[in-house]
Length: 301
Image 1: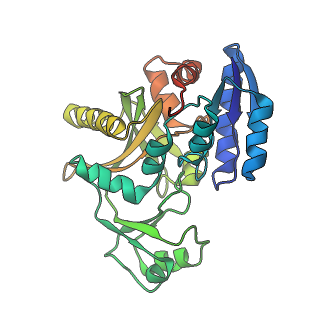
Image 2: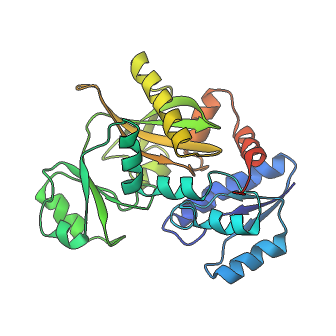
């Protein structure tokens, strides 16, 4: 097949997207496909011209962050009636918006951390919640712009950083284990635990070899593992996701509390990405995942 891989883009996750996209291009070539990589032009007219010139059978969306995985690119491809990988417009946009997706999770009976939406001005004026709490951009990924606030000094440091949005989601910090579930075509594959060597599972830790230990499978009680697997499938189906996804959870083994943080409809394909690692443990190769996504590609009719 003639496949266009979208990579790069213009979000803060541009470099991560290049890493994912290059790995996907390599896999597609090994699978025998014709591959064209496109770094989308932010001018919509020029982007459509890039697609028209390439004349793809399928588009592999390896973009990350805003515009790439928030439903805007799929919306364009729906209009062009070109099949693309991963979830469609509504699923992608709802999953990307942490405030909206929290409400969906709660409606499904899944626990989320106590939280609220605040402006940078409100946050800088003082603690809006009792520490420790987490500050998160509402619609960005890869933990970019995320901060754990435990002290006045932490808040002061955050206040001097670049501001990523007009509003932020602030949630109680949930202690315990960082666990994530990979899901392909509606079926949860397994649970992995991330143990950062310092700090938390931030951007640097995610994409730098040796800064985090991956425990696969996660050393969890069987009932906890089963809950994570089944609830991830419930969320995937409720959001009408397609292809692959990754759900990020916190598990406090002292209180047995399990909290869903988010579901990512465009998980990475970098050397340290978790969905390929979990799949490999289940004897599903990187190339097999890529081929599955190509076979499941579609557009909203």
